Image 1 (spheres, rainbow, N blue to C red):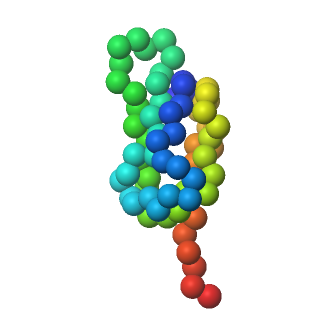
Image 2: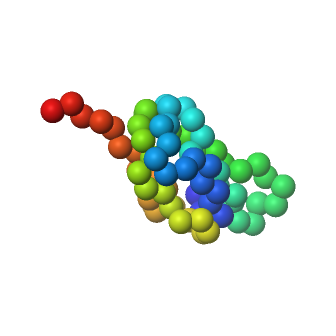
Length: 69
């Protein structure tokens, strides 16, 4: 959903699946709890949306996974 984004995790942080990455405070929904966005996999947070407004379809975060080569 569109709204004001609050990214909780810091760049470079090790993230576990299920951890809260960010909260979206939906515009025009006064009194509603924020939508929590949770990681779908383990990884390292290498990019995040700049604080402010986010729209549906925007990239919120990028998690990197180490690959043994």
